[in-house]
Length: 365
View 1: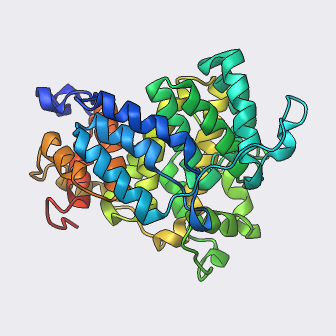
View 2: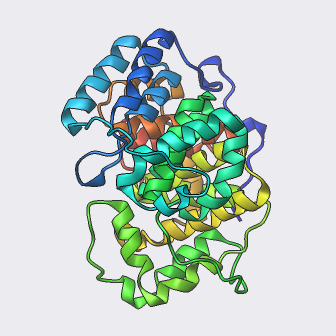
């Protein structure tokens, strides 16, 4: 069982309270007004992080010049593409035929803009996520990321964009069959997945979603989706496992596991219990599909995790200041999500692992 933390583990100083936008409000509003004009993906279907990372940067106290500088660098380095125009409208009867078709994203975005206007932000999410939740691996969880930041900001336009992107990049992994679960421990699911022989030696791609797709095509991987029993404590246990995985590996894929649980927690406020359970189940199936990418690691022992969480590390104000100077979108994303998750669960290992990612402390492993 992951440890439970009492209030004494939680942050108490003002600069370690809940994240909130700083003085960059006007700048982020101007920059965010630009974001719909840029494609959701660029070369080889890499995800455009800018719309979400700018919000994260503002929320960790990024200054106006840091927001402008980051976006200019990101836009030019990644060679962002303009978003295409819709060619023909979709309807409630026809939109599902476009699920999983990247080329249909302009039409899907237009459709969902109308649906968010009709149903409201919360109503649209509650109506459409039950359909889209099984495809949460869309763009290696980056459509989930767009949705999470849309609901965080309570931005109807961002939510419509997220719904369109999720539908267009929907990644179908093997569906749950209702078979008897093998465990209620997310960590055990990862350990069991590592014993699937055909996953070992599977060629790897640069894109996480392609590695998930290929792992999911292995016949021995098909039962994985049913292995985990989903209960009231599953999200917390997944978060603890993702944190241990990231703290122990500092791996890029493990970073996505940690941040992805933050995104699910945000989105779940606008979902019923069944949809949230589906998101958790399929999200963890997707993480299990990345075990080859991760190198089939064993999770750190509880004693090591406890030692690490008590290591001296900079405070969140310093971590956020360092992240705000970074041009790496994942540094900024992690700094915000780790901060938010530590506030939710109280585990000081979030701060230690974030400081290690940013090079602010040495390798503790």
